[in-house]
Length: 119
Length: 110
Image 1 (cartoon, chains in turn blue, purple):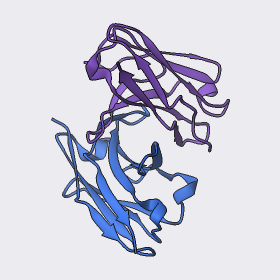
Image 2 (cartoon, chains in turn yellow, brown):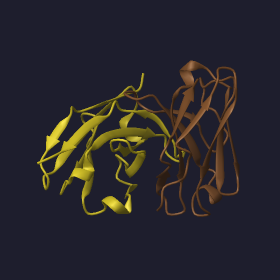
Image 3 (tube, helix red, strand yellow):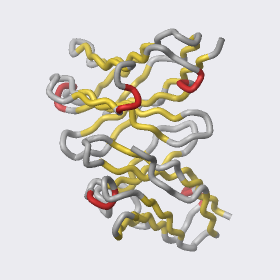
């Protein structure tokens, strides 16, 4: 079955960067897009961006442009999301979520990775 | 892109029906057939319950239904059950090829 397994919780200081991984299994990695979505404490979900492992489609929410990078390692079916210049407002649970191309919905989600930014 | 608007909470008794509204703009909900609803039990991964305004994924109970009128989409849960108690988020694909989520609605089963 489809599984998205994310890396563990991270604690970072303001100004630092964080990298979260999302390892996919149970499907052909390059046939699906991966999105990143986050949820800050007590807040709703927030879309960060879409990553296409084939490199055709990549788009970030304007709020994160210049600060987010998404990459992948097809040999391990893993997508990475790097977020730089962290502030306390980046404290959140970060999710990766799979999209079948052109359906526009997220049919499988990772378990979430808590990132805490604190001095 | 501003977030979509949902009520903070909706309550109902077992067996009742409830409806959650999701209001956006002509740049998202009003112009998109790609409106989705996710159910989120805290501590678990969100789950898609409605896609493309009114379609149910395989395996989702037919107690869940969706609709849209103008800039407002709605999710109705009929025959409310205890297991339906969760947070519900609508999201829309936008005219700028991005996504916008609502702040979420907590459904309480009394």
